[in-house]
Image 1 (cartoon, rainbow, N blue to C red):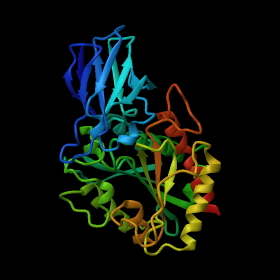
Image 2 (tube, rainbow, N blue to C red):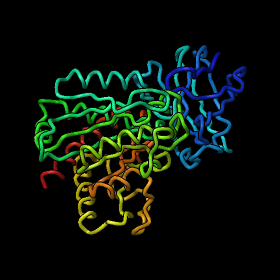
Image 3 (cartoon, rainbow, N blue to C red):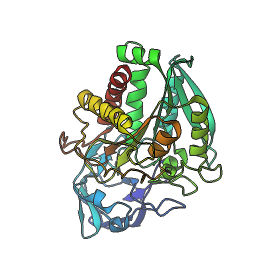
Image 4 (cartoon, rainbow, N blue to C red):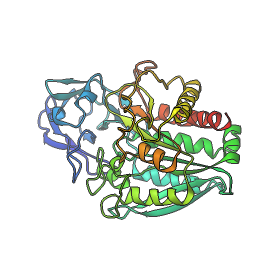
Length: 373
């Protein structure tokens, strides 16, 4: 019996695997930062053996409240992910499962590998309706890929959609896959109409280094990219620096930043209510967009979310706040759960890649209705 994680996105330390009833594990911290919660590993050689895997340091992870009512995901083929029996107890995350085969993968959420990212970029480029540009390189020297969908003639709206500033929030790139597929679908009338009105600038993965390294929140330099938007640097946060420079060239009429939240079992949007220039008009824009997304997807709701900042109290290093103020535009953060949704549960899969993609598709409806209003 063996535990391994030396692969794209892998993260675990095996302390002891000699007893299948007490496989002792620890989650590694992000390289140059002290964030931890993401895990992804393989259990091999345990077919038809009742196993009890214990993540010993769960209580010292970044978002302990994220373990409450959470169930681990698992897969034999790394395509179909299902939930397994797990619980948080006495500061430990305990997984109990009897594998049917000799190779089984466990993860915090269904991983989105860099290989799949490259496939997504290649597929989009081959569609004939998308330009792929490399904005620059990451700390580790990986490409920062951006898709431009739609022509860039004068007068069109400039819609920016970015995802996965926090690499462990893999649901964000699953959302991207659904969103991009629909925007590029020539048979979809909403997609066609949107491309008549807007140009999309899409960064499917803002943090390729952290994604490959198996980080939760930081890049290779230890930077939390969603706290780097005020003064990004090429040394610490080149990913944000390159995207922001391109935004300055194109302008921004709408920015949609896609994330995942560890604790809250809901899909919700966080706005920029605390920025200095917030006013009734900006509030009406935000309210209108959220109302349209409620109509487009029963998986989205507006009752639960983050506390709203008081006027003038926004953290201006955060993407949504910075972009809303800098470009005087509607900017929003979409949050999806690691857990299942309370209002629309799925016991077998919980909140899943497929549901992320469907919400990505539905988000285009909300953008369309918001645009034509």
